[in-house]
Length: 437
Image (cartoon, rainbow, N blue to C red; front, side, top):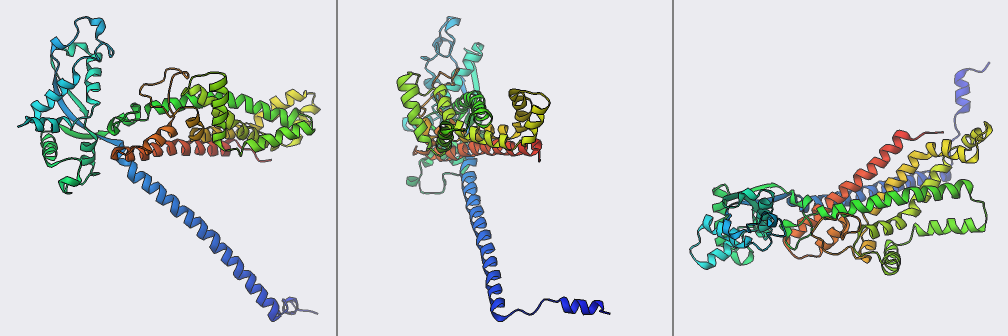
């Protein structure tokens, strides 16, 4: 009778020949090297990603703070119109705001010479007069009194306060001279200088001065365009995908359509900008720089992505769902719209969000249709001139002033925040509503 130990001994693997052992050793070594190469590639990619995010955040964080100076502005009644109907932004445009503000800074710092007064004036942002005018428009009863108001400091003063400009450098290497540094220190000591959160970054429009530039107008323009893309790409893309996947006959024409849709998804985005320029602006004669045109162009660019992703979501629904619906008497249309589409909804929703995220970050097609224009006021409708967030970042990146470097990085941070949020939302919705068959 054979014992267990004898069976174990007899079933043990035979010894390997030297040649086989050598080949196995080489194969295992190759596998280990491949794992090391793959892990190294991932680590290098993550390292570059960390470097990129670190550099953007370090450069952009100063833009989320702004420096303001408190002024006591005398609003002399004889300089304002007596008709209450003229106390509007347009009616007060010709009032000598600059003189009032310059007098206020001179009364505060008391220059010894005319040249000193000029240096004092340069401490204030040109946007200061707009802030005083808006305060009077909001409350006309201020006329005839002294208005205490915090106004934006000039970009160089802001840079000094944030440490972007090293005040210990020799005077000839600074854009702020020693006298101006003395005035800044006096304002700071008197409590007339402070740093605060930069609401201007999110409320203002384009400006040639970095301290008064913002992404407010660009965000509204991007919002209008995303709404247009959503309203057009969702129904058209889903309808096209449902027809091609569920109803279209399989013949040469549908094959050509499918090939072209797949090819359009890989076409450079600037080509869609050229198409929008030729069709929507030159032929249809829609206004340049309008969010409507930008939305139409981005819809054309997004449609192939939406159609392809929606078809993939429809294919993921098991055929048994369709067969069961047809088996209990449902029509083809009822089986699709009552059963297949609801089950494919998570994938369709994900495709729409990813398409919107892709459209939100596009710049090249919008440059072709003129959305690179400098716009100072908020668009009230999609037909009004506007710009977009990525285009605003592109325009800031080409400006030489020191303050626009921080503004550019801050805009990139905001755009990346939107893109990360939209992609995270797509992943969350897909995980939450996804069904495994």
